[in-house]
Structure formats: structure tokens, C-alpha cells
Image (cartoon, rainbow, N blue to C red; front, top):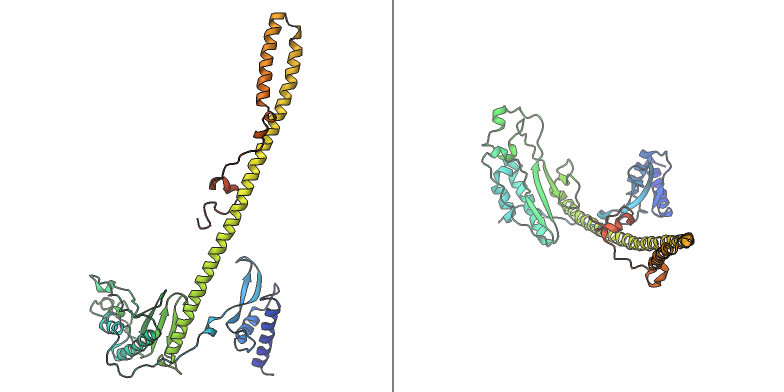
Amino acid sequence: MAADDSDLSDADALLAGVVQAEGALVLPEEFDRAHYERLIKQSMKSSSRPHGQRLVLQRQGGWRSTTWAIVYVDYLSDLVVKQDVAVPEHIGKYHPAVRAYLDDKDHHNVSKDHLTRAARLLQAIATEAVRRGLTVPEPPATPQTRNKIRDTTKPAHLHLVTAARTYTVIIREIPGKGGAVIDYNTRYDSRQPTWLTRRQTHFVSTGRLELTLNGPGTPYDGNIIRDAKRSTVEDRLSDLFAALDTAILQANATEAAAKRHKEQRQRDWETARDDARLQFTRTKRWEHFITLAADAAAIDGYRQFLERAIAAVAGLPDDERATALSYLEDMRSVIEELNPLASPTSIVPSVRDPSPTDLQPFMRGLNPWGPDR
């Protein structure tokens, strides 16, 4: 059996193993990472791979965890159908955005000999985008500066506007190696187009073009499509729009996940808040009971002391005894007034509605003012 066939068989077994493990196949503490990464890559070719999903190696239980597992994640590229994109040979009238690109000599990003080709590619993209229902507005004018060499902005050459988001396309020529070193003073010559300023060597034209798609759902550096030995950018415009479709799906999925996460946070917070209210009320009711019990115990002590005091003054002269007994009877009235059991209706407490500050000790670390505060 060939090595590739063996890997594919092992990849099939891995795919099945993750399913049997209910979506997360936990690996031993010591595992051959390169081996599993090779099988994961091979699994992309397997007919056993679920449509719209792929395997990844993922840490379990937080970034400090040493536990790793192979899990399924969404693979949105499966859900995208590529469609050929025609590049016009001749253009009667440029799209306004492409016309703006041609007029903005400071940001062509390609040498003069290949400018027409770059415009044709941008025209094809704009035409296809409009056909798909996207809006392609004319890019805003590049802010002018008093000293052009300070204008280091890299404006997008096309804006592809969906119902909810905006994506940008930038075209550039990939420079060749071996350009002569530019004299320092010449390097900052403001008479050059902006895209050529600050270079340390002369731009060597190769005619190789590159497109970069940026926007929500794209990689950090964008989706890049460039001329290669066996294919040209013209051949791969379908890849650009497939990347756009995938980015839109990814952005939708990210937003949906964020919405679910926010809703779950809200539910968790409301549950914690309701529990905190119960705990607050229970605590206040218990504190009230402790106070009643302490007051009742104190009253019993007062009564005992009162009886001992009455016995103690019995031997006093009549006038002094009368005065002492009168005082002690007044104290008996006070004791009965303070007796919590003398007014049964006051036994059950009335607990006020708690404020966020009241709830804070019972919120298990969550913010009592809200889940997002």
C-alpha cells in the first residue's frame, strides 16, 4: 500500500474516531503532533469527511490546559460554489470605480506597461460584483497632503458593499529582485507616484499581479490571489469570489456565535441575579431571626434580673422600697414593650428590594449592574 493510501486509511479511521467520541477525540498527554497534523491534512481528501466540516487539533479547557483533542469545526468553503468570472478583452466604458483607479496615478501599484491589464481585472471584478447584487461605489478621494511623500495610505481600489458589510480589493504588481539602490535624496522625490516613494531600490517590473481581498471574515492579511507558474489572476477570479462568499458566511457565523454568546451571557447573568436576590432575601430573613432570638434571650435575662432586683429591695425602708419597686415596675413595662414576642406581627420581616450593591456579594463574581458592565 502506498504511503498516501495508508495515510488516507488512517485519516478515515481518525474521522470515524472523532464521530465515535461525540465530536472531541481527546489525545494522550504525550502524542505525535506532526503525525496527527498530517492525518488531519489528509482527511480533507477523504470521502468520509462530513460536508461542511473539517478536523482541527484544539486545546481543551483553556490556554493553560495541556489536554488536546481532535474536533470537528465548520468548513464553510464546502458551502461555496465557484463560478467562472469573465475578463473582458476590450472595455468600452470603465466602471466609475475603475475609472477612479486609472485617474489616481499615485496609487496604481502597477507599472505603466501593466496598467491596462490591472484595469481589466478590476473591471471584471466590479462587473461580477454588480451582477451578484453587490454595490461597487466609487472610492473616496485620497486625502491630499501638503507633502505628497507623507501620503503613505494604501487606499482600496474597489469597495464591494453587501447588505451588511464592506469588502475591499487592492491590486498590485509583485516587484522583482535586483533593483538598483536609490540615492537617499531621490528616494523621497515627491515627483514620483506615491506608491513608488520611500523604496530603497528601483522597482523591477515583473508583470506578475496580485489581488488582496479584505473585510470581515477574511484572514488577518486578507485573501491573496496572485499570478503563478501554472495560473494567472484571470484564471483565479472565481477563487476571489469564492473567498468573498466564504468570508461572508464566516462573518455571518461569527456574528451569530457572538449573538448566541451574548444571549447566553444575559441568561447566565439573569439566573445569577435571581439566585442572588433569593440569597439576599434569605440572608436578611435569617439576620432578622437572629436579632429576634438575641432580643428574646436578652428579655429573659432582664426578667430574671428584675425578679432578683425586687427580692433585693425587699429589705429597704418603706419609703425607699416603694420608690425602688415603682422604678422596677416601670422597667417591667419597658421590658415587655421590648419583648419581640409581645407583637407577633413583627416576627415576619419585610425585606426591601435589593440594589445592585446589595446583590454584589451573591453574584459569584458577575457584575450586578449587568452582564456587559
